[in-house]
Image 1 (cartoon, rainbow, N blue to C red):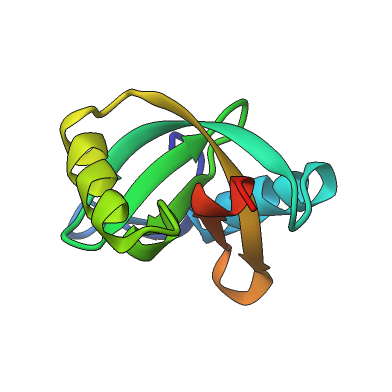
Image 2: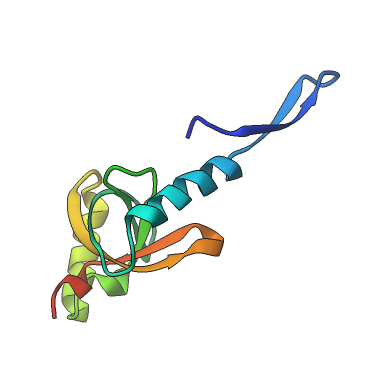
Length: 116
């Protein structure tokens, strides 16, 4: 992100405090106008932790989160796919938006919910 709001300038210490919250809120509001729960989106894997995959939703600055249990209906397959996606950052995938939490500017995604 390269946009923020200067909230304090201290000339004595030469420090500037910047808040990115107004920019994030603006971007998230734009996202909510374009997408809704149930929409299928194209994403690019950008990061992972031990239980989450983070994916940048195409044409936005929003990262959605995919829990390891949301990769496949089969637990063993879910684990294999999780390990595979962890190693393949920048891989493009499709996922379904399962929740948009406005208060936290948070989007959850699922791959397994693309299939019955």
